[in-house]
Length: 208
Image (cartoon, rainbow, N blue to C red; front, side, top):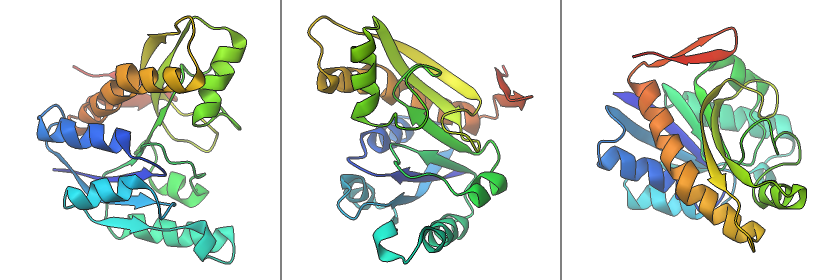
C-alpha cells in the first residue's frame, strides 16, 4: 500500500480529487496517511478530517524563523514514513533537506504547461493572469517531481486546456482545475503507485 502525505494551502480541491480517485479505484493500492497545511484556515484540513485522515497545520507564523519552520515541517512528514509526498496547491518552498531525502518522491501540480508561466512569482491566480496577459490560446496543467529549482523537476504528465474569449483569471483557473488538474494529478499518483514512472537523467519514461 502506497503511503501518501498531501500538503495543501487552501481549499484542497486537488486533495478532494485524490480522495475521490482512491475511493473510485482510479488510484490503486494507495492511501493518504496525513494532510499538512501551512494555513490554519485551509479548508483542505477540514476535507482531511471529514475523510478520517490525520490533519496537521504547521504555520510559519508559529516559528521564530524559517529554519525552525522547515525543521517542524520535515519532522511532520518524516514521522509518517511516506512513500510519496504530493503538493496539491501548497504555496511554500520545500526545504532542501526534504528534497534530498525524497528524490523523485515529491510530486507537484502546477496550473500551466511548464515551461510556460512557471518559476518564481507564478503561483495560484497569478499563473492565469500571466496567461491572459500574454494572450495565449492554450494553457493547461503539469504534474512534475520537485527538485531544488522552482517548477524545474522532471515532468510526469501535462494536459492542455483552451483559453476562451471573455475568460477572466478566475474562470480560467476553474476550467484548468476541472479539465486538467483533477484528472492528471490522480493519474500521476496511480502511475507512481503501480511503479510505472522511471526517471533517467531528469527525464521521465512511463513503463508498461
